[in-house]
Image (cartoon, rainbow over all chains, first blue to last red; front, side, top):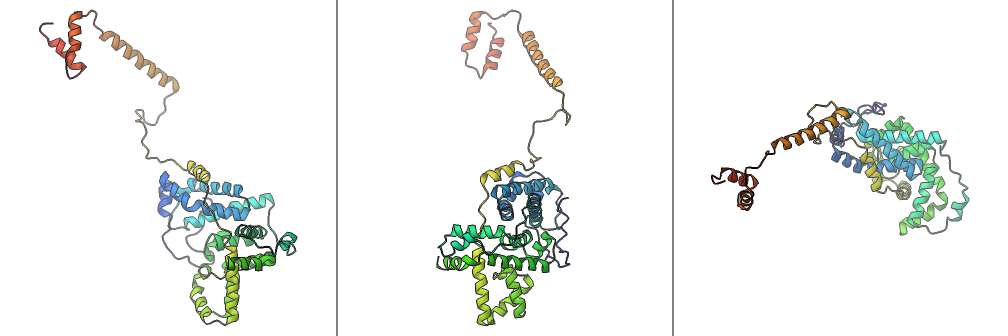
Length: 207
Length: 150
């Protein structure tokens, strides 16, 4: 089954993920026997996060919704065969979503890249007071300019609240490699936002 | 945990300790308690940067997307369906049509055969039957049949 090969709570590093009951286990079992109410609950619980992950990875809301829909199609298809005790269901969903995003990025040739520190429109507005929406847009833009692996690591750990072990599992890298990706992502973002960072910070602190 | 490792983790995970590897959190917190101002300043600066990144929030999913996704979910097999007299075998269309036609013909034939050839009840008695206060149409009819005077 696609993506379900994620092994039972053990990262490939051999570090055990603490064995705990999967919070989605019961819902997934009920979805597997066609319980619409359980399906609805599962959608409410995970759809926003799936859309969020895809939007941050792809930078396009409509495309993000397509990906989220595709993730749930796989959920509906595989729920009946889901075996508790393997990876957490949510981790599997994240892996499916991330792989779909990476596939789309590769197909379309959008890879992201290092941000040039000499972005004139950003500099020009550095002294301008920014409202929350503008600040958020700046962060979004900077995220989109990150190389895809850095962006993926950051999205999983910062926005999807995955643990370092889960994120490393999803990306198929070691925890050390994940930390390296995160450090580079953070450094790249600081560089991308450096010109207006003081402005952004003062806005946050005073507002 | 030494300062170098603290900085390394801070650069990767940011200032929010809940994001740090579980096994490092307590040591990091302890180090931060007694850390020199220089290190605390670095941590504060990273915390501000975390706030900036946190502006990029998730909104709720749209209702239309929720509806679309749910419409694709599998159906409940326990939903009651009409009784299947012929098991799961599907009858061909001609057989279904034939069965309907046959039942209509049978109903017509039974109705026609059940009609009396001639009524033994006079028109006056029939009118009397209709004015009786019975429990229902059946009881009126039975009353009329049992009436010795009819």
